[in-house]
Image (tube, rainbow, N blue to C red; front, side):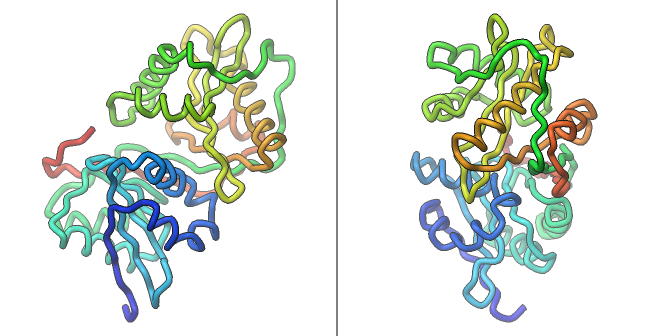
Length: 282
């Protein structure tokens, strides 16, 4: 492809500057990549970034934050996904996995397996939702409130349980908890005590991502998750002037139904591939 160039860097701030127009053009689809880079730029944590440029304009991104973590890939044309796989593998760098929009990620994984002679195994399938007209549940006892520093141990316990339950790659969640807690982005639905947890990222391009939605088993089937997410989306809209997006695992019919009732609309499907090539995974 004429005019195609893939550049590699470890400078998150520089990537945000170079790809500013690309990110702002689709903050819904690029919310994960954008927010992760903002966090890494702010903390100075190590990461690795690849930019695909066509005729000098950024047309695709792959990020690996932290090193060894599954890479995240932006939506892009098949030929760009192939070029990314060729460039990254050609550096001698090895990825442990990749996640992103289904068709892009599958194209990248297919090319990667040929280049590296490894297996690509689907580990997760999700759907990206964006909020349309919010329908906040009523008649659910309790209220939304921010989590406080004194609840750090509970947040670590609940976020760890969330990882196990969703089948996400395991690891110590304490650093991630501390970052979101210090930014005051964790919220509880409280009904005589915390009953459900959710997190809202700082808005970027008018979009905040709702995540880490977790209700301990003993408090389920009482409407707490729907009430928590609905109230948090309302807070994001009213207090920050932003809209909400979230991801739901396609294997969890209950969560998909809840989000639909709240007014979320499907945007795209996402896949997560694990590369079985001996690379250490978190």
